[in-house]
Image (cartoon, rainbow, N blue to C red; front, top):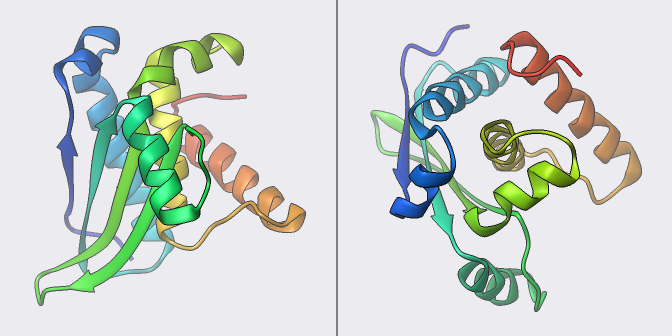
Length: 155
């Protein structure tokens, strides 16, 4: 089943636009959401929010919600609310301070890393996790599949 509409609300600081070709990334991120929604066989219109925050803010969120006093790259908070028109799957918070350095570490580029973090967060919103080894394998396989199917990255 094809989702006829998806919407992502982006909350960002101007710094992210200076580091990454944001408009192109935004289009691919919307396509990732459509792909994930179609995989869930959801006929409803879906929406979510992506918040770009600094390391200090994501550390605070990680501590408040997960009891971990450390920074991280991405956090997801599922909501699963339906207002009669649109199914709101939740919020993804991306640490914009580490996108560039993390992309260098994995020999990628900041734009692709941003897309990966958004996709990773979205998969958490729909139930994927990587706490157990077997779940991690499923999530890694799904991430690779999405990037390949959408032509974002082939390895």
